[in-house]
Each structure stands twice: as C-alpha cells, then as structure tokens.
Length: 385
Image (cartoon, rainbow, N blue to C red; front, side, top):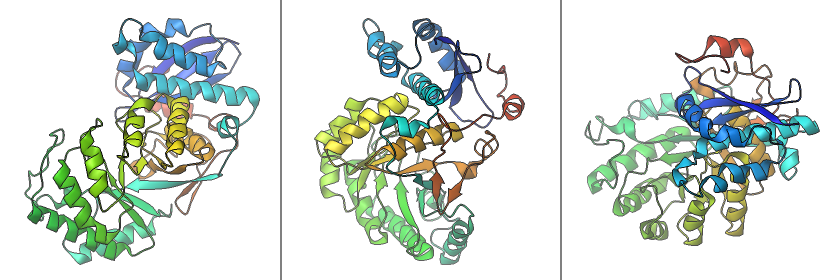
C-alpha cells in the first residue's frame, strides 16, 4: 500500500482551517485530517512536500513525520508548515485505524476513558454589571441540551459597559489594565459566578495581550469567583515573565494554543511557568505531535487541555488523543457554532452531560457527507481537487 495523492479543500464557515484527504493505492482506502490553516496555503506547501510522501507507506507514520519536519529543515527551516503537517498526520492515523479495523485511540495506548470532557466558548452576559442579564445568560447555558459543565469567556463585553469602548485591540501586546478597570472586571466575573452557581465551571479567556502586573492583578480580582484557570494572559513566547507571573498568580496559569513544537512547551514546563498546557492538534504535528507533548507534560505532572476551533474532524481526532492520554483533562469545541459538526459526517455525534462519546468505528470513526461537502465549498474551491 502506497500514498497516491494528497488533496485539500476549504469549506464555508471553516475560519482559517481546511480539510485534507490522503489517498492510497488500496481501492477506497483514504484518510481524513484537519489542517490548522487555509487551503490555499496548504496547497502551496504541498507543492513542495507531497513529492516526498507519494509512493510512501502510509502506516510508517513516525518516519513520515520526520520526513515532514526535521528532514525538511536541512537547508530552509521555513519550509516546515506545521498546520499542514498536522492534518496529514491525522489522516495517516485515520488510514492506520481503517487498515487494522480499530479506532485510533486503541492503537495509540489503549483508552483511559471512553468519553472526553468538552468546554464551550461564550461571550458572557450582554451586561456583566446587571445581575438580571447575568441570570438570563446563565439560564441559556443551563438549558443547552448538550449539558455543558465548563464554559470559557473573556471580558470583551465589558467594553462600553464598564470599560472604555476602545480599551482592547487585538494584536497589541503587553497592554496594561488599571486597578479601577481590574476592579470592574472582578465584579463582572463575580456576577457571572453568582448566576452560574456551582454546577458549571468557567475559564477566563485572554489573548496573549497583557503585561505581568496586569496578569497578576487579573488573577487577584477573578480569584473570588474561582475560575479553573486564566488562559494566555501574557505574550506567546516563553520568557522569565511567565515564571514570575505563575509564582504570584492566585489562579492556575495555562497557555499553549499558539505554540507548535514540543520544545516550546518544554520551556514553560521545565521553568515552572504553567500549571496546565493547551496545545492544538491542528497546529502541533497532529496526533503524533500531541503524544510527544503529552509525554513531556506527564514528566512534570502537568495536565493537558486542548484548544480546538475546527470541525468535527479535529474534534474527533482530539477525542481519540484525549481518550488515550492519561493526563488529559478536557477539550474546547465549537459545536454551537454551526453545521461543521452534526451535518459534516454521516454518523451521529453523541454528547451527554458535556462529554463526547469517543467513536468505536475504525480510524477517526466518521464518514464525511459528500453532498454536504459539495454544497458547502468555499468560494473558488473545487471538490477534492
């Protein structure tokens, strides 16, 4: 069996991500993965990478990962596009599972769990400083049939309603919040906790924008509401600032969604700069890359939480990883955001009490809905061209 083709498509409403199909010489046997980047970039990169994969045995996954990463950096390090590598790696594991007639999670280590905890994003109440608005928002969350037990939200909706309208600008690093502003944010989160009660946990969502003093101050004002952790409070790369922040934070410190290599995570863990990590399977060399990161994390007794802004393909790849990872805690999902979950595959997706049931079918355990794919291609895309 050999790899015969690698094809990429972009769907409407898929954000920055795309799907990849790895075809083989075995009739009807192929693997599906999700790339953490747009199809146009992935196809451009595949022009360079695909010739090194065609006619290779798709079951030799770790060797092919080396071909796609380390063996590409001999002369030009910028040739490695990790999101494309991630999607191909997921597709190779899908093929392996189908060949061996087993779900991916049982091929990795065997399962530690058959259901994985999910958490979902929300913008928070319309008016954080109005308790009735907070109760209405909390009631909607509690009424969701998926039974969410964990949610994540930042404080953007306080802009113009407690904080200045233009206070936050994405991409501006090391910004500062004043004590007065932090006090308002703290009040808002306490109102949210009061409305949610203690049946639902929550995460404070940041975007790598604050300075150290602000991050510490944020931990102090949200601590009474008892969040699970604060996500991405400081700029992305590791520095001693992260360690200083973690040493003084009143709340768990988490980061990782914008990191791609195992050694990047190792810097945070070895320097005692995080309480938990947050890798994304579509950016970190797929399932194989996530396993390496999780193995490192287990040496430092660091829990693994996963970032996920993709479709059901990424969610189920993450679920198989999570089922096979001893120190896995939960994963983000975008199920409420639309049709790239329930309608994208023919098999039913089962979520009970905020937990996803890991499929038992071979590979990822799903069959993509061809009619849906054909009718929901992004502008200019050709079906598995």
